[in-house]
Length: 168
Image (cartoon, rainbow, N blue to C red; front, side):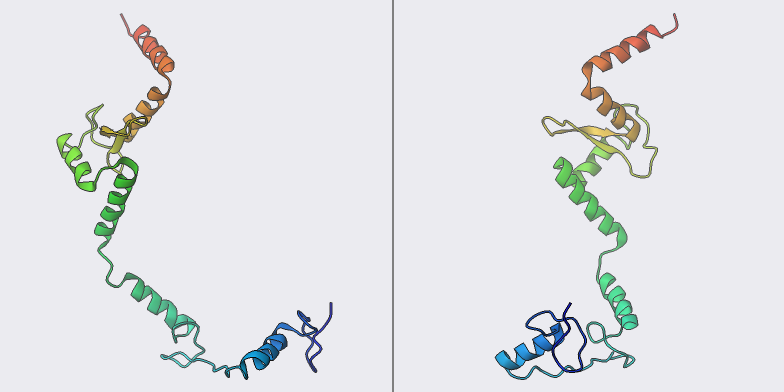
């Protein structure tokens, strides 16, 4: 590789026999006059070298953490807003409609009539073909219904097996 043709520079030549630094400085002189002098910025808190927004690395990270959470809604409200967005996007219902379904079912699964056994609550059961919401199920019933719904022949065979296995 060629080195920069500028005196006392041993960097790799990028364009017209000059390194990037010297090529850019000559471009500035030729097209826009003398480039503005580079001023080393210092942190407004401790006078170290500034990284962003006039702050050093240490103070910028603290500033970013404070401003990131400043004025944000409470954690429960953020979670509810996220759940509301998820319900609207996936099932076309609001959080209020989901809450009404939970109250109508008294917080119990529509199939097994048991409360949910996980921390996430009841799953929204919906028709994949037409998209309407049928009710709320616990995770176990939702998974079982999803498996049964896919293959009607398998569902009939499993039902026959269970009937045959009943003690007489």
